[in-house]
Amino acid sequence: MDDIKKRLTILVRSIGPYHNARFKALQKSFEVSVIETRPFLNEYDWNKNENKEIGYNIEPVPNISKFKRIIFIWKTLKKQDPQAIFTHGWADFEYHLALVYSKLNGIKIITGCDSTFTDTSRNYFKEKIKGIVLKQFNAFISAGKRSDEYLKSLNINKNIFKPYDVVDNNYFLKKTGEFRKNPELIKKFDLPKKYILNVSRFIPKKNHLMLIEAYHETLLSNPGFPYDLVLVGSGELKQQIEHSINKPGLLNSVRIFPFAQYSELPLFYAYAGIFILASKTDQWGLVVNEAMASGLPVLVSEGCGCADDLVYNKINGFKFIPEKHEIIKILKELLNYNEDELSLMGNKSKEIISNYYGLNNFDAAFQQILKNNNRC
Image 1 (cartoon, rainbow, N blue to C red):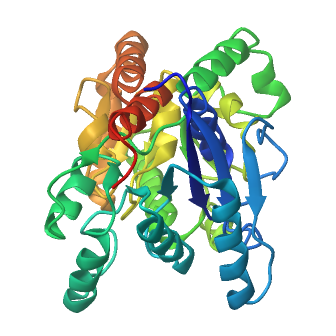
Image 2 (image 1 turned 180 degrees about the vertical axis):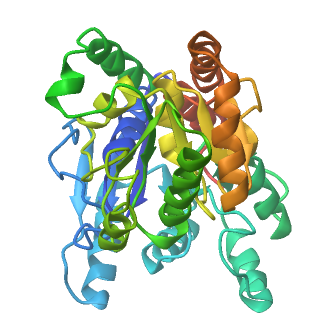
């Protein structure tokens, strides 16, 4: 990289805590500006003021007509005069607009990809059109193996870099370490002494109802099963999930906590024994990164995009098919491991995530893309 930092403009719907961590990491190498294209949607329950630190320029697009938003974004791009543009995906019209701007001005444009071929139904003709559009981008930041395969299915075979889906590993490592020095907080926050943790939105694809059924059957067939189940999240299935635990043997074994802000998440990871994500489908599963950075063994569904890259069976956790009998099987498998063995798995999680999926790796990918002349 040159001594003078290149100007990088990033387009993202709304800045969340993990976006903020990535953008701060990129500031080491680039002069970063961010256009929030749809900050008014409130897709997640993030505290807008938490961890959004001043240090990079933020331009939120107002909730105005589509035509006026186009004008606003175009003028903002012109004002920022970027030497490179990065879009968080390619489906939104705002990203198409940035693509047009980049081509008219000879600017390198990069897009992020954590899509997989199986994360949603695919239409042949739409995929063909998508492939044509994606050919116009100069480079791609891919989440992992499945995203690589998806890009290749669209005839994108070069200029693919990794990793895309990263979190601030050091934040979770440090904060969970601090909490673990104060075990009395378990009682204060009404957490079980020993629990399996799930953090995810309460929506159908996250598979909470099946997870609870499998957990219940595991308890029935294994009296004295040592783990409670803790669910952290919010969403449309909250009432159904609450109703599903209203039965003998579950009320005292399953705890439900509301959506946790970024500052609160390490508390739940700190005292958990194991982390589980049982999604039927998930593009990636950033909570797995968080759990691994927190030093937990992970149980991850094969439906999660991260399973191929982050989870090594019997090394740092287990992969499983997101069906009830398979979840039961993997829960019972835990009985074969003592605390020391599970702790070794957790240490391996930290090693894997820190070596390959950190903010430094994310920044290095951008440096590699832009190390040459920024013009197309």
